[in-house]
Length: 304
Ligand code: MLT
Image 1 (cartoon, rainbow, N blue to C red):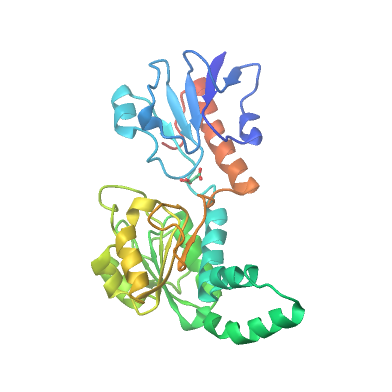
Image 2: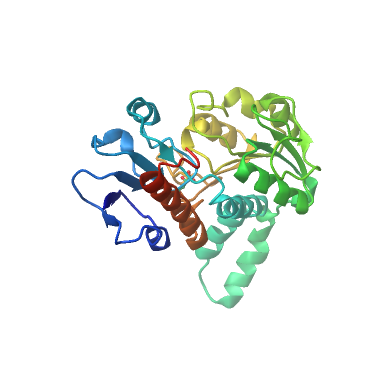
């Protein structure tokens, strides 16, 4: 019998991949053989020496102490691509919402009072400040051409945008399933200088921390929109706030609320919802549960 500890929010469909006659599953247990985790920060935990494998039900692995686990010979399995469609849909929503000033417009409507006639008059007087723009007139730069970046780039092309891609590890020709209409940027700076929208799809590494900073925001076209549905520290929030306040940036859309961004009228922040669809939660949990099962029972490593 293998013992599996689940740390948080692992979908039931994923757990069903671990037959109960061979796997005991609990959120608290002594000497687990494996841990299944979603977003809990495992850097702060004392990971028992009994643990032989870790399954991260998501793409990013920055919440797992990978180096320490490698030293122990513990593989970390993740679920690349399993939530890519969910993240893509949230990024597209954020592009459309910011282009049409919807967050501010909703706020305006919420604050309307009086009777229908008064509301109608306020709408007629106030709607001018919410005039937006259409996506085909804008350029999108996608940094990171893994599963999510590729889906975002392809979808933006279908919406009629001009799309540029950059990934330090591959060319646009080599990116898996990327539409051939996506153009190759020569560097991050080159991509930014061509883009009004930039969408970030890179992991959090030393090399990507603060990737979007004050100097780089200045390279972007006027009325820039930065979309960060990857990890908060990839963007320098202070630089973003200054650019928003100076009118250089039109909006910042991200999946990570913070005290610095809180209440800013040009920030659209969601509470780490990128992978929060029932489909993505199932896909991620099923993918890692299968990998953990195969590793514990057969010693096979499919992806780590
Ligand atoms: C990911 O890395 O794929 C996401 O952070 C997953 C999640 O929201 O749990």
